[in-house]
Length: 284
Image 1 (cartoon, rainbow, N blue to C red):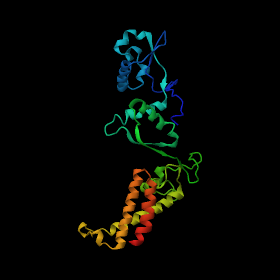
Image 2 (image 1 turned 45 degrees about the vertical axis):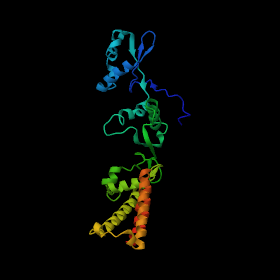
Image 3 (image 1 turned 90 degrees about the horizontal axis):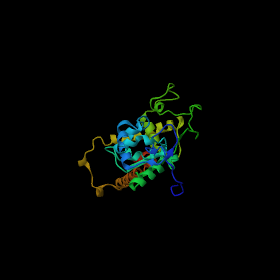
Image 4 (image 1 turned 180 degrees about the horizontal axis):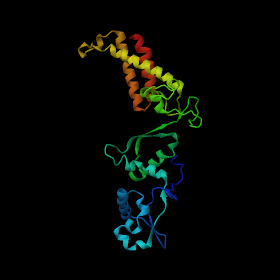
């Protein structure tokens, strides 16, 4: 996509947007943009915001060196392409704010951003710093209803997260599932493609949540009086216990791999469903 794209014209002729801080000579139309003019305008914008370009007179926007010739220049009226705005957000956020790192660990957006934010961020960062603004990119699909259709208020198939958590007016049709059921659904779906959600799916997820929670409570109850001094050396354990620990290590390795690769649905499938519910409980 990058090697095949055309040149990027970052200017737009709009009546709104972030201005491109260029002055033009009234007679020759020769542009005036230097390191000193940019630094001066940057100081004004950092204090008053980008709208200062529109309401402040030219002589105040020009640095001291050019103020006696202010009448010879006019302000440019072009604005930045909005993709340039969002694509340079790394410079104002992750590279400037305390507690954040540059490059960012992850950029997360929908699949429509491969030619949008992901790419504009990459172009601006490489052009100015020589490196990408992110270490990883995660692309997600879109949330559809149970039938696979786009959600629409006019159709009436929108699933409101707040109603999922606290319930709707009709508690039978829209029961309160709580935040944990919604979180469990999020962790169970492969977000790299479009995902489905609806009343039937939520009921199934609620059942799975109760089974999972019951399993955890049962296992923890078996450990309520366990103390570290009760530990038994691995070599002294029965074969079936050694096999259980072997399976546990496989589960832990799978979990770590899932987290490292942001594949949370695999953690749900492997550890929560397959291992705990169908292997651990019968043995316990």
